[in-house]
Image 1 (cartoon, rainbow, N blue to C red):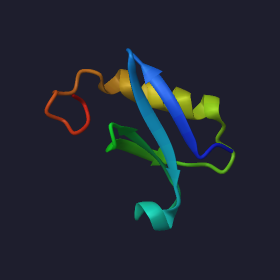
Image 2 (spheres, rainbow, N blue to C red):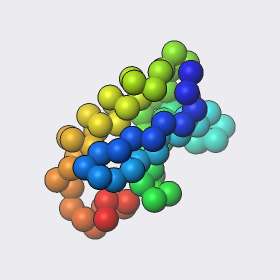
Image 3 (cartoon, rainbow, N blue to C red):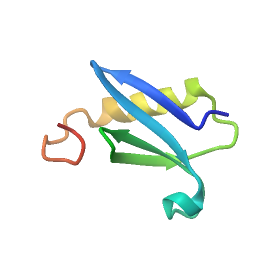
Length: 76
C-alpha cells in the first residue's frame, strides 16, 4: 500500500496523499489530490490501493475536470 503517489499530467505534477479519517476530517480514509499544496479533490482510500490504481483515479479526475475555470483552487 502506498501513502503518497506523484502523478505527472500535461507537464504538471500532482501529489496524491493518503490521509486517515483523523487527518482528513472525513468519516474514513481518503486520498487527497494536491497541486502546489492546495487540495483539488479527494476520493475514498482502500487499504489495498496500489500506485497504479491511485494514478488511474487521479488522471481520470484530471481529464474529467481539465476544463474547470482557472480561478478554481490549485488549477493555475
